[in-house]
Length: 349
Image (tube, rainbow, N blue to C red; front, side, top):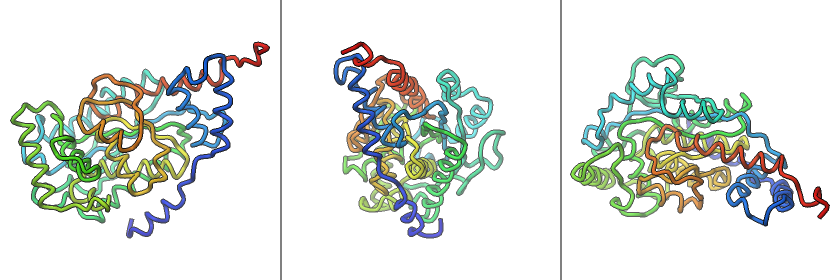
């Protein structure tokens, strides 16, 4: 993406939800043989899917998880309990279909697409798409994680992946990620965009002890002091203290919204990418669903900022899109209820 104007042009093409389809879906839900609102979030899901797709009976059978991978220079500061090399090892695991997201996706009737937007790996295993912007970000504790142009490129790639999946017939998508150390940039971005203090949005990630958590918080504070990201400019925040996989997921949200495709967010990193997308294009927010509430402290803050209600609370913090996939059966349940439950009129009432 050569300039911001092209992104602006894309944003202008994000459609509003279809209010008529939403209202007809709401009327249908209210006619089902149950008390009004008794299916809770399942009703909300179905009504919003109708508005997103413009269909009173939306189809969601073709499901896909888009997993974006990237490495982070800030791991040099000791912010992760695992070495950066694990990112490459996990991409091998994705290639073999043995990661948690693959296992869950198989059970939940979904497929997985893995995209490398910024790992350090020079060669990639079969099945991983090479869309690398650069080999990992720079150490944000010493300067910007990437250039503004690289941040825009990561967004462009995410938008293109969303457009490709729509072309393949995908009807319900989810975002996931893999990148050792990425809870550190996620916390930094969350702090800037929500205005919350670093301590409020920084968790233990892959399992840091108390000393490791304090070190991580200090690294984030230093990164913010060094880079001075502008909270009014989400691209500036992404470039200075973000990650390439965060940019890829943010672009995916924008691309999905452009093509009327609903997106289920995963954990804290997926959700911070969702907030970046919404700050870039507020009209993308109605296309987002929250799958679960993770144990990372920033996650609840981000969901509140986005006005999203998580469907599951299971104490998860794995990433990969694993929590988002586990929410897919709830979407299937909403579809089944809308299609198969009797209405009161069918009972003669």
